[in-house]
Image (cartoon, rainbow, N blue to C red; front, side, top):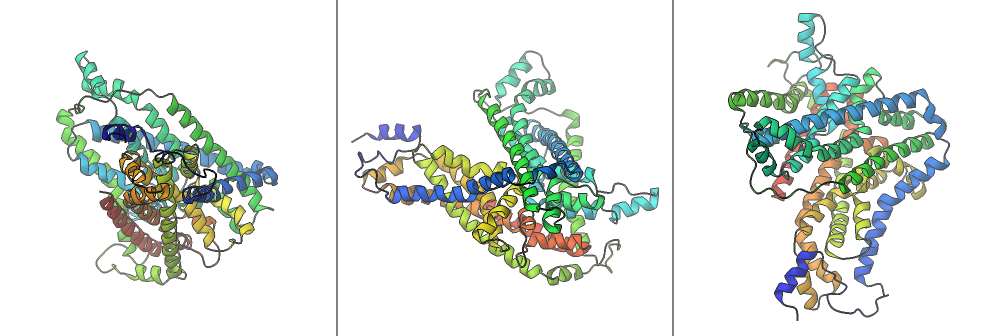
Length: 563
């Protein structure tokens, strides 16, 4: 019998080989419960991810939509999408990196609170953020009205391409900030200390030694943000369309809703194929860059914070005002807009009313949209929770040649724009009887959000020794029983947290829902979008405020659960 020390050595080397833990197997070719479970997971992942990708590729190649790609509308929308995605991605990386350096490597007071506030835009749906900023900088907002009466024109009309880039940047910089912060914490402090000993000042050491080491993380965050913003629908539709700033996502929506082209599905599939190719190229470039990265030794001690000196208090005030302006101020103006009866009405105690909330909740389709969103979000959370728990457990705690492929395939939708996933399910739906049903939206949710649970399960299990599974196998448990009783039960809390995150994301999602919309299947996001498009700005603000508050509370509960 192996000693406890040898057992610990094997457990620290990697996942336990459950096939060999009990010696030779009898009937190796038979399909036992363990193999059946693995096969079921492969079939589920193939059906949810591989089949949609193949379907859109086949239709794009065989269909006649390629000729429409030369249409001036498509070329204009493509240019707008590339410009807005690349510019917002670059600006988000600059802002996120600056905040990461300021909050992580300086002695700025209140850094913990400022860090939480700076990350809060990521917790709000982009289309809700767009409505919130319209209440602050829209044509009839109090700021522009006041400015126009004093200087003869608005301060800044948010509608148009510049507003799209601005809001995409605001909702993307927290991603860059998190990625760069994680990389910054891995940079050895010894390098900066050596530069300081050699005579360099603290700011120069930070700029010339630490910042260049962050370039790989900055490039990764740019790739992720640009691919995500390339097919965003909420912000371009609410901010861009009033000024005829059309992107690929809004153009696809117009094709599907109005039928202005002869074969809209083939044209949309061709557009989706191009977006898929761009996204995959970005992923490949990022993977190649990651393979050539240089690993640094772990830092021996905590880094010395850069002293700001006399600029410490002014820098803290400026940073706090900037962070509050882009996080709290839009929510305040959204709340004010929700309490007014109509746009342009001054905010006074006499004009405050709850009529906008009443109109929003009593509007046609609101209750049905809330019910559909809750149902679809709950089913998506349960489905992703079960599949993510199984995939995360199998790929982490067992050894098999297909584990890397299964993990990579389950995480692939993170790099695929939601527009492509929606188009892929539009192609599949008529062939499997899901067309014009709410279940097509559920399938798209499962495809898009499965990776959230897989990552939630994979990360903690990877850092947990496999000693318990080995002990269960030695005691006579089957491979499947050892996984179920030990690994799955350990990963259940992580899977629950991931499933809650899936539900909160799905209940306020817009891009997939609006492109896969069918009679009777509208969701909460679609209801808010329709109210905004119909000119019911105060009602859409009221419903958006409810979604924002509930979403922030739910994400706070998720964070508390994870702790």
